[in-house]
Length: 78
Image (cartoon, rainbow, N blue to C red; front, side, top):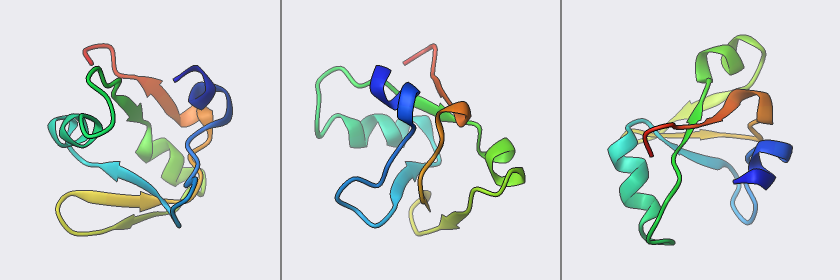
């Protein structure tokens, strides 16, 4: 998490960053990788206003390119 807050979210081995619309969905997806996930909140409205593109997919999934760290915060209740 500390690294993400420094460099942002990167697609890594994928074409895009995958974002869940709902916290519960994000939690379920994260449980596939870890038993104690940390949910990150994206300031999507602010990011979009500043030129970050988002692409709507099926099942409440959103895609984006890099999400810079200034648009990311740790969800306090995760």
